[in-house]
Length: 162
Image (cartoon, rainbow, N blue to C red; front, top):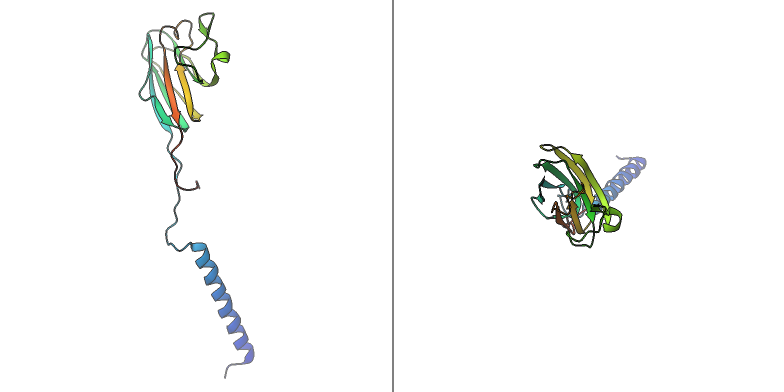
């Protein structure tokens, strides 16, 4: 014969197990699979600078982290500046033979002057909008070492990042 005390303990145990099952079922969301989204990969853009051009291998990427790999295929030192601006690539204001960066827009970052044959990288976070990539070594911008660059709204990943 089972004692009253044992019946109370078994009833309590059964109630606790049932409560745990209800809580676990509610947390499971009715599916055995959980959707975990990963952030989009960093966009990679290869840029060639030379006399007298700046040529990215793509002129549009989604918003987020962008890594520019710039190669100086020219005979002179070049630099690469990333600026967010509403101005056309050939309409940036000039002062003393160089782009007036403060008046042209929002300078995001730059690769300082680097030697012919060298390659440099720059990783920046870019929001949607119009940008210009250019070299601001004296006279280079005016000679055509510039390019339009567009950043579009990032594609939805459909979930949260973990």
